[in-house]
Amino acid sequence: MFSMVFIVVIGLTFTRCNEVDLNDDPVEETEVDIYKVATVNIVTTNNADIVSKEDYTGCSVEIRSENEKWNFSGTGSVRGRGNSTWLWYPKKPYRIKLDEKASILGLGENKDWVLLADYRDPTHLMNAFVFTIGQKLEMPFTNHIRYVEVTVNDEYVGLYSLTEQVEEGKSRVAIDEDNGYLLSLDADDGPELAPEESDNFWSSVYHMPVCVKNPDIDSNDQLDQIKAEFASLETAIKNADYSEVEQLLDIPSFIDFMLIQELVYNVEVAAPRSMYLHKDVNGKWTMGPLWDFDAGYDFDWGTMTTGHNFFMDHRELVLGTSPLNHTGGYVVPGFFTDLFRSQQFVSEYKTRWLAIEDQIMSDYWPATYAYAEAFSEAMARDAARWPINKNNETEILRMKQWLATRVNYLSSVINNYPAGTN
Image 1 (cartoon, rainbow, N blue to C red):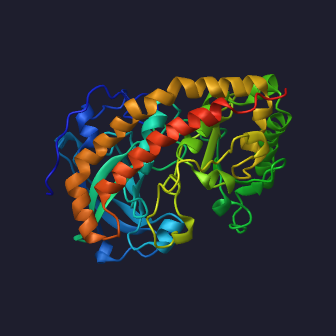
Image 2 (image 1 turned 120 degrees about the vertical axis):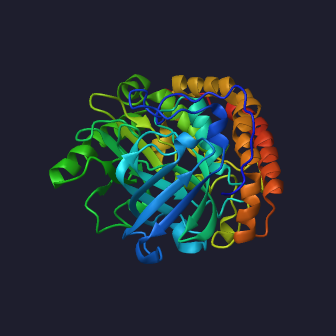
């Protein structure tokens, strides 16, 4: 077993969402347990290579943690996952489907688990930082991170982030299985790039690519019904009538969601890609879960297939200095910006930023950095296995400095957003 690093973390509290249900015989944990690096050993049937992200290969899975109650052995299957991360990079991400539901490393029982390779991310913290913020802000169904060192067929493949699959489920997005909606606004899963699928459509008002993750689609009428309900939300946002939108959308979750996208400069909003929202029966549309942030933080897209270059300029903006007009930012779908026509919305947006801006570096960053302190030895082994032209500790320092200067810059930008006209 690899050696572990012990740390003490004070004052970190996780709330809501995906932790083990107290009614399901929870696995005992302490705050420090979530930072310890566990090991995951995957052995495929006949030691077969994992070469597909469509077809599963049978496997056994063994997990060892310093919290012995988190140790696990079971069977299931494994395949590749991801889009650019699977296509471009030598270190591959994986999806595991267990034969039986299980609590893994203190997280809620489920069969489906994800191993993020973080090969593009030289800090291994980009997703962890956003998930930490989401948990701190009590955004519904925010994912969690457990760092693990992985071997496949006795070959060491490095340090990974283990997290939940974004899907409907009691310990995931807890909506009605048959009538709750989980949608992904994602070009890769939409009608243009996945025309063979029967679960996607172009949205009626903003012409965004939409993929229905829940429920399973069994007829065109069902898909048309979801499209029509989503169009009602789009129309309300297009009109920027606050009282009308408020009946359909959880506006606080929308504000938190967009503040996070701008904070980490996630330009994927423009495509869009990996933008989730959900709606339970008789409930409001709610943004999230948060997902996929290793293309944020001012990533250099010019070297996207080979580079690990981030943190170039803290003044780059997604929404710009006037989100409604896309001034100085990306031309993102109006779904994300038309509400800035509402004076009440703009006022609440500014007020929310004022409430959290000081917490970002005083609270959210230290809670994230605790992972780095814990995985430092594992990161060194990963760097030896997958050498890149970056030093992990240096890149983490650059990330911290970039975020600190960006928070100060965004405070000025957001405070000077136009007040709105409605």
